[in-house]
Length: 380
Image 1 (tube, helix red, strand yellow):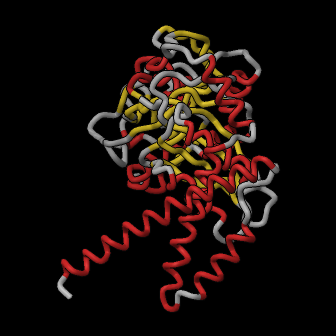
Image 2: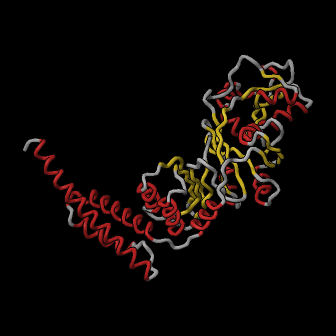
Image 3: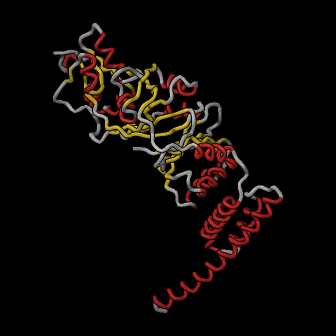
């Protein structure tokens, strides 16, 4: 046959397949109505396995493709069924409540918690988010979380990921442990300088202090200095600059911002580029006690665990893919005290104003071992 003849036959089959698919989805609707009436769960894994076994057994050497096709059909059917009735889950209740009080604009002021001291990058991000904000500094990331959770501060601003050095794992861990929500995201261009006391040269430096993320972002430069210079992590880049300013040592320096040079009476050692990449950005999040959804919110963050078995993560991804939602980030963290089991952090491009998204989140909550919705927000 000519190619055109083959394509014509495929087109005819596609029409038949569409008709059969629509009939199957209509039957899925009837199944959903029955299950709702009799308080039955949507997922029936035993029946799905039975169908897969039967269909793949009839498929010969195309069994792997048949298995994939029917898995997609099952997921589409379940997604459609979930959209037809709600079970009143916690995540649905949380989202519905947050949408009742949706404000018109993101606030420009408030009491803002930041980790570190004056000049910290978190403070710069907070100033961008809240031009008229009143900033309160805390020694640790956990202090910021506790201040927001206990109502001492309205908002908290924290770094969560760097384009060169990856995630700030401590912040992800605290997001799982504390009862807060993400209400905003901000990207800040990071420009590190090597700061020392006036007149100190690079040859004199024996210690360089900074946050471990900043040290990682400048790792190539630090390696080039060899063993004569010690890299010492500290809690914050601005705190490193303050430490250098207050130290009696001459050969001590900090990796920090140019802003901190003016604040603490230090000088950048000119003529060197200490960053691994000039395209160096850090993502910051703003947390609040309540999951408020501000205008333009298009990103959702989730924390969840799933059963430790083959296909468990695929089932989650399939639900996201079924709605053609873009998965922006997926990161796993080992669960302490468990045998190679993991906690997963998801960031997806979606809005809770879409009922289908809320249906999917409800389904994930019901199907996962643990599930936490951290908010719907916009990242600038």
